[in-house]
Length: 248
Image (cartoon, rainbow, N blue to C red):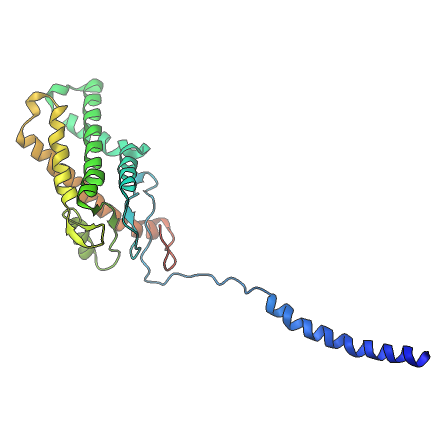
């Protein structure tokens, strides 16, 4: 009996180290790797944000190198609605209304608070009409993409020229560069519609042409803002650059 107990003790002592050594590698293998932080390349263009300066809507801007599927009819409608009825949508009409009142652009509206109110609501309707024509009706009929795709690379002159060119060149739903019918024709159609709610005396081809050109010019300036905003946000406000493959 004593011999049997001694033999069992020896066997247990021999098996103890063997079991511990066999489980150690398994425990090491099951330990998850520590997460590796993703660092954006130094030349990775800065990313677009939903708003410029935290106020101005920037919903249609697409970050450099981001590839998106074609927008549906519903998405184009939502895009135009966001730009038209966002809380900050009053910003541009308010400035234009003030300028128009100061220059007495429409004498029939008068001056003072009442005159400014008339200028404001007319300008707001102008902007809303133009948004839906350029961002919804036109793109649906012509199968164009109303989003602004940031160039993000190259010198200041190159990027400036690219941004301005987007007023007459855009992408189709299939991703090809095409003449921007939505912008040019849509802005013209919106300017023509404005004659329905302006005083009869103001309904002239000259005023319609001026409104048309102003709409296209405002959009061209907005493209410039969209192009350079990511850089301004990064260098002045320390906005983070995106990791590779990141999308807005």
